[in-house]
View 1 (cartoon, rainbow, N blue to C red):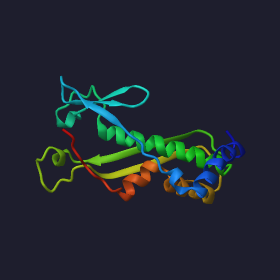
View 2: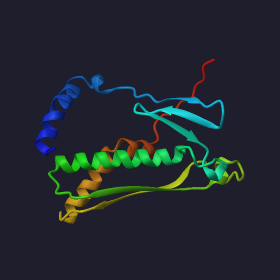
View 3: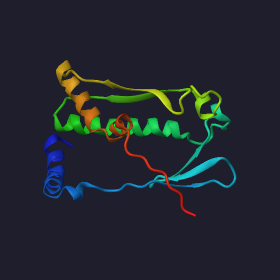
Length: 168
């Protein structure tokens, strides 16, 4: 897809959202069910069923997907798609590109071993390896826009309002 095709595809959506902001607001959903045989959750991905379980550092077998890895994978996927869309829109000459996310985690927090250890990632690093001859200013612009428009990056960096509820 080139910049012209991308802009043509998105133009009617952008216009509709400008005319009626409420049409741009949607609710996405994820659903899972607790496994009755093991400490796991079956997550419906829309394409397949992903089984999420404990990380080996918390006693898991390593056979199931771990939600922390899934978070990093979602960040990589979103950043990669966003980078490609931005590069296309900017007519940025991009060859091969890879995206990597790394996160540092202290499992003492999630296991309740040490109160001072945070539960969750204490640092996440997102990096790109780009095959391009573009000047550094264009690369900087590409990365700035990718960061700005990546939904997952913005969500974890700005902390949305979170609520928890239960039904019986």
